[in-house]
Image (cartoon, rainbow, N blue to C red; front, side, top):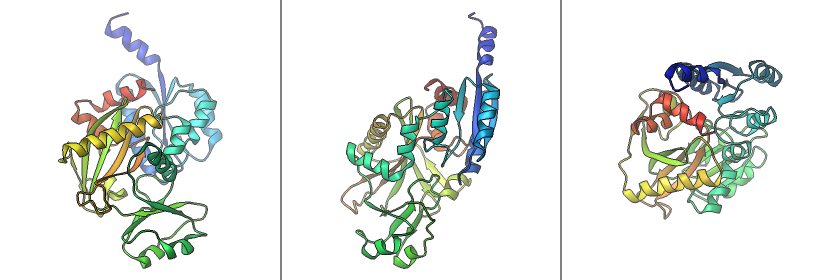
Length: 314
């Protein structure tokens, strides 16, 4: 059974369903991620079925039961994909899946809950207040910090809905949706850094130099909008802290597979500190412009090898 032909037969027996699309505002990103993952898996000899996830949960369950996968690669983003919902469904169906558990995903998707974790484990983060459509006008009358500031949805990815407001009029013009919580937080000036994790070990730090005010949706998914510097040209102590905090958060939340943690490095120490953790992403994108594949490539890990490692780490 040691020859290559026999091993190919074994690999072909493994059936992997790739969940892509989804119902969130990040559907298009998920479709791209899923397509690249699917292509890689097929190339490696796996039996692959792409399942385009919609709001029809019964249809999803039907497709899964019909295909009977040995493993699920969860390429979904945002609501239902990385907030614990799909994970709970797959747990119920007793199918193994990529990335983190339902409980971990639920916490990591909620920016307020993750900040509570940051506080608990002693990593620095920007101060904030939570608001909604009902109490927004009242709460912004007595803000605990000065402009500019940031407003963003509590549970949304790809920087969707994030806005930097220079004054109260800009903040008042921000359109809040019903039944959604938002964070208003200190705007931390400085450099954008990010660190990925693979198999519980931090990869290299990337600095993101974007043509926009911050690394927003357009900067993330439009070629030429962002310059990626790897490894980031930062002081060694900041590099060590970035990696240390990334591993600490990953470990405390009991994350699996890959994650990515985003930082702001403020050399001027505007609010007394140099480094701030912004958030953790338990299901980073896997497109050609995605950051974790970029970090892995720098380490000599090909995209195909990265996909294989994600599967084998779950």
